[in-house]
Image 1 (cartoon, helix red, strand yellow):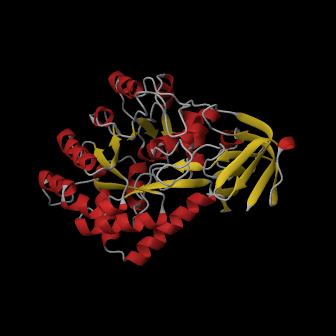
Image 2 (cartoon, helix red, strand yellow):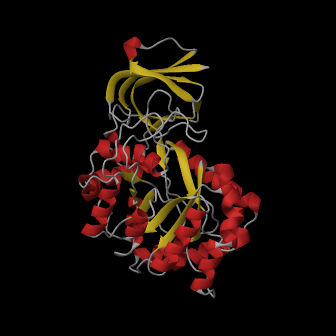
Image 3 (spheres, one colour):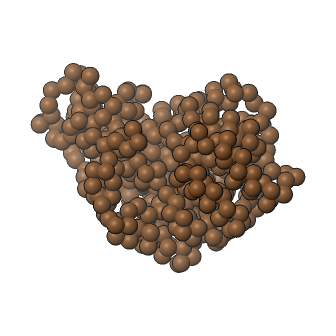
Length: 409
């Protein structure tokens, strides 16, 4: 079954050439994009969809979420808005609620959050464990997550549970807990931050998860300068997320990780000898909620760092799945251009999940850009250009969504 989407006013491909086409068309065949170009040259297809002069983007790639949870933290939010500072300790509130919620309800809640995200143009999602914090509940969270999202990250190293010794808990994270979640996850993460895991503990976690064959991510430099960025680069992590407080050395380390990288690459992946570096993932909705300084996205891009935007959807510090809100904030307050912000929320997220290149990678087609052979993840705006995302802040602009070639909205 093939579908022609035609009469596209603006087609922002976010491919290696960063093309923006006008009066364009796209053909979907099965789960993949089989053709794109000028509408006047479009081939025939089994069905046609008239885009009505709207803009078409890749679907959002949300590379940092925490969707497996139960409970409510509005009281914490109200206190923070009244002037209390954010600390990592609120995670324990969610842990208690999550542990006491059955599998059916925990799955139902997560599925609802995924559906909400897809309805706003998100077509590829990562999510983390981290609200179980014991062997049984971390494994349960990983198993449930594997049924509702595209990529699962093990975050047993989210917080040391009350009453546990930090060193003993780190050993649990690196041993029995890691073994229990391993069948369900592709990635591992650590909250390398004051009040969570220090440098030595974070290093132990990253090494154990590397030895287990998992890709790495790091929560780093959210509440102050610290070792998170440097550890991420040292271990070759795919991304370091938050990055609110960065020294010149941190920015240099991130930029250096991309030295010589060929963005065009080859069909199977980047062609440069150094390969991919560590993506800096900015979480602007979280920054606003915690009243932290916004991550220095402009400085990172100017230094040559690859940037991603993600929602950080979670119950304590960023209870939103709106990637459009993140894009709008990046344009209006982080000084990114519309094209840069959209790229960070699509191609950048794919790069942070190492799904940006190749027609088939581990059985999954590339996401985050519109190119022949890539997965047909498309987001049609109810606007003639992507500029309207920032020009009309807060207005719901999603008109239609295709996820792996299937109409999702």
